[in-house]
Amino acid sequence: MRPDIVVIGGGTVGAAIAYGLAKRRQNVLLLDGDDGDFRAARANFGLVWLQGKGLGMPAYQALTRRSIALWRCLSDALQAETGTDLSYEQNGGLAFCLGEQAFEKRRLDLLRLHNQRGEGEPDWEMLDRSALERLLPKAGLGPEVTGASFGRHDGHANPLRLLAALHGGLTRLGGRIRHRSRVERIEPAGPDFRLVLEGETLTAPRIVIAAGLGSAELGRQVGLDVPVHPERGQVLVTERLAPFLPLPASGLRQTAEGTVMIGATKDEVGLDTSTTATAAAELSRKTVKVVPALAAARLVRQWAGLRIMTPDGYPIYAQSQSHPGAFIALCHSGVTLAAIHAELLARAIMDGSLPETLFPFHQRRFDVPQAA
Image (cartoon, rainbow, N blue to C red):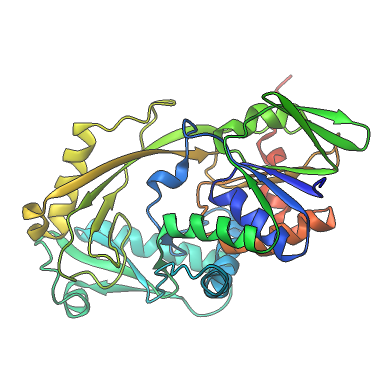
């Protein structure tokens, strides 16, 4: 059966869009790559996060806020459809501050974000050390911890379960997934698009390019020239420990299974996905300053993955002007934005045009006129 829409890229971004399209009774085909692809989902930290996001770009803060408001519905729907518990908790989140200077900088940054929003009460507060110790009585905070910011809307989930549930929900709603299906070329074919794969071709009236770092090459073929580059993030995982961290923190969270995730680095190393001892040592040093007892924990895994980064770090959502019906979606916050991708973005793609709320995320924002 000929698909209504083909989504290229089976990671968290593409899967959420395809799932949202299937919910709207679209005949959608999701093309996943192969095991050699640079999958950001492999090293995702699993935060569903608002605090600190969007300084200098109010549209991103608003988009994140809107997605988080929809996240519980997404989690419940996926569990009802697939039986997969995403371990989603939204009890707030922390950003630890080491020293008075860091504490004050964090306060001022969040205050600027609140003033940028220009409405409502602050959805965060600064906790001094005594308040933080009351909140985390089992953590045993290090002496350098001055306090933390607390975001009331922050939370976390299992990112691998999210991806599996999106795939499962898509197929249960009648959508199709093809694995090991790398798109080599996109060609206009009248009002349609011809996708050239190894040994075959597919046609569809609409396509969505959500292939992460592979999106730039594919996008150029349909008039979508997007700037994107990789940023490596490394994550450490400990053995299972007794519960001591009831809330996730930026760079430190205890999962529902008891393991502790520690991260993440920001390495500009191209397409290198190897892990390094230097990163492990640096992450460990920083973590032990926050929770000294973790120095005795056994590390069982070290991951590395590549973030999909744009020049300003914010998403790109666009439809091609030269090839209407070709859309592109890029971001490095696939977990946090999964709900908005499955709702607002999927509905816009089905309707054939992006709403004004997504206009600030067009890649034209990077077009800078050259001096004469």
